[in-house]
Image (cartoon, rainbow, N blue to C red; front, side):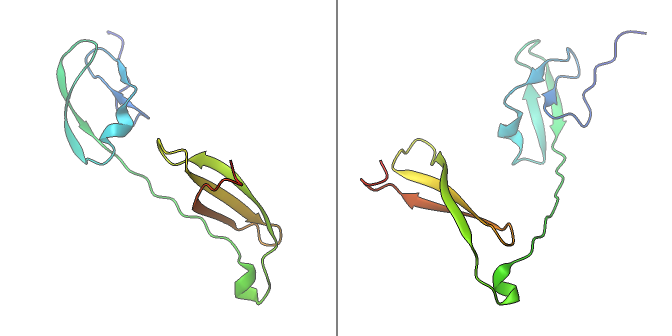
Length: 110
């Protein structure tokens, strides 16, 4: 029996003919399904996107009538190609809640 190609429920789109992985599979995540050409063997095949949704919960100081004790904020990353807008994160030392927000850079921040 020939080598079987693992191409179902994988983390990237895998060509079912040659086994080549598509490193840009994330670009197809907004579609439910479609047709794609393999960049290696150039054969066409169909793909299906399988989504998994998971939820998390956390306690909240303000729901218990307490105040948050924020640590941070810490700069996480810049907004796409703009260096004047940054994403920040801060974390409450009491309830461990994480708060993300965008802020335009000021001269003091640079």
